[in-house]
Image (cartoon, rainbow, N blue to C red; front, top):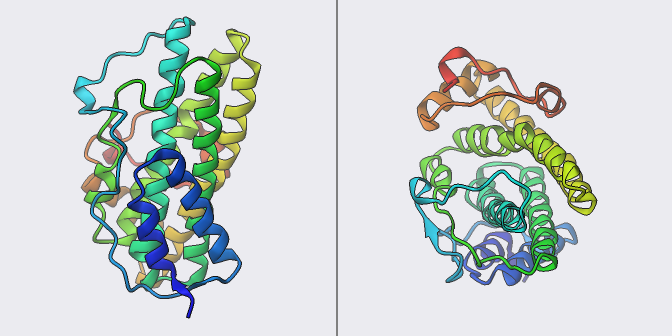
Length: 263
């Protein structure tokens, strides 16, 4: 009998070593795609995934400020922060598939396992970039607030879709172009190409989230824009902060935020 997709996802979530987690996420996505995992949800998802001993995780208010200059130290801090975002994004995508897949169709599970595999690839590429700069993931402290959205929305797939892909990942669409220009100004063309590749993938990830959110709203007889903005005010009380990358957001199929959803 084939192993269940839920048990495979749970195992990946409980893998602490960063490289091993990335490999486990890609393996789950591959095994699902090849029909090696059963569409069964016989294993509970952990409230929190396993984490390595390093990086030290700090509350957002305790995180050191990153310098905006082009120093080597500043570049390392930038790439380390991006590595941590991608590392947590692996778990967010895995948890989406494992926690909510039983109430959704097979395509939902496949979509978010594919997202998890992409995030694992992004993490591996950024970690490699860190090593070319003489550093590694875990060398600096990291933000401990990124999993809060998963805990806040663990009860409802619509809330999870509204906040994780359609707010948190969508924020990457807004800020990445400026980072690309910053790296280009420093002459970091390999870094520019890497972030351009990640940006293209993230537009697709946000589109996947928006499409499934639209489907959930349709099944519940709810209006998409109104429901999204309501869920933001309920579960993302910090509010959305501009400026927004309107063209990337439109390409991803995002609704427009209302005044009540803005910071």
